Length: 324
Ligand code: NAP
Ligand code: WDT
Image (cartoon, rainbow, N blue to C red; front, side, top):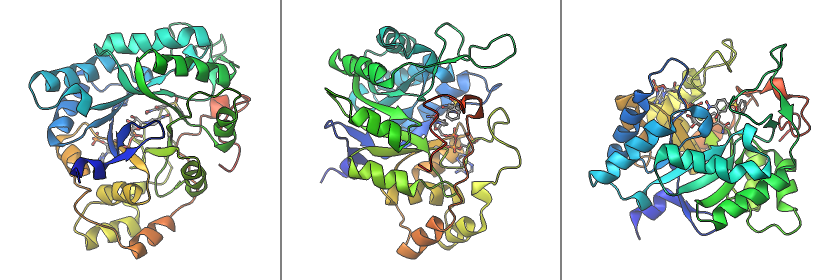
């Protein structure tokens, strides 16, 4: 068997997604050039899945790293799985394809592997990522997500993306897409916050029953960016149980948090722009957690969500009011 197959999952549209991906979102103040360096290191150590977004404002730098690693013969373009996301200001169907073309132009690539609806809530169209009114409130709008989804289907048919999916959707929103009359392509994945303190066991079970891959973001407990994350929130990587399991296997808490997801059938993202930790995070295919370890980590769940998106709580598609 091709060993790479063991490190990828087959999506419901026939394409393959590597089960471990590199996150590329960086906090404000991190020099943009750091992304290029980190992604080149990541490709050198074996990462083949890169999670990006228009929102992160570094697709030029991320694309540069990929193109340089293709040019120097380390990888071929088709060996890389690149995800970008449709930002909320581009949800009106007539804006969707041009939004993807903007990402492609920044990347200087001719296709992406995966194009996701970043959030269920639309925002006022325009150049600003977070359009605000005079009182400083983010200007949301309601765009029928089924219309946005049809525009993503057209991007796939046009060859601009191999696969399409969603992010930050709950069960009800997923069902709304799955039940859309005339649905041409199902979402291949739902990318959501997922870590030992928010293990998403119910959403995972639902996604598995529909052949939708659950992709875990903030699997290491987020970057704790004060812009989004409460500074008093619990720290996943300091968890005593996680650290005891890590010690027993001679691994780090981060490696255990990533391995946990791989073993439960979740595709996992890990953001690091640090060479040592990028290498460390790729070393999760050469050890195994026992069923008792898995159970102990399952027991850490406390449904703690770092990204609450409170500013959009009254939007009709706000996803985090329901249990899952
Ligand atoms: P994360 O992967 O949970 O954690 C990253 C933090 O942990 C970084 O600050 C990193 O710092 C540190 N770190 C990495 N490896 C470590 C290790 N082995 N030991 C100790 N610390 C370690 O971060 P995230 O950015 O929240 O999530 C990952 C990616 O998911 C994002 O970059 C983005 O691509 C995606 N995401 C998507 C959404 C969405 O709405 N769809 C939301 C959030 C995130 P260093 O860089 O210094 O190593
Ligand atoms: C929940 C809360 C979902 C950070 C906030 C989405 C913030 C998206 C990242 C991201 C949001 C957001 N990131 O990768 O660091 O849209 O504000 O992808 S967000």
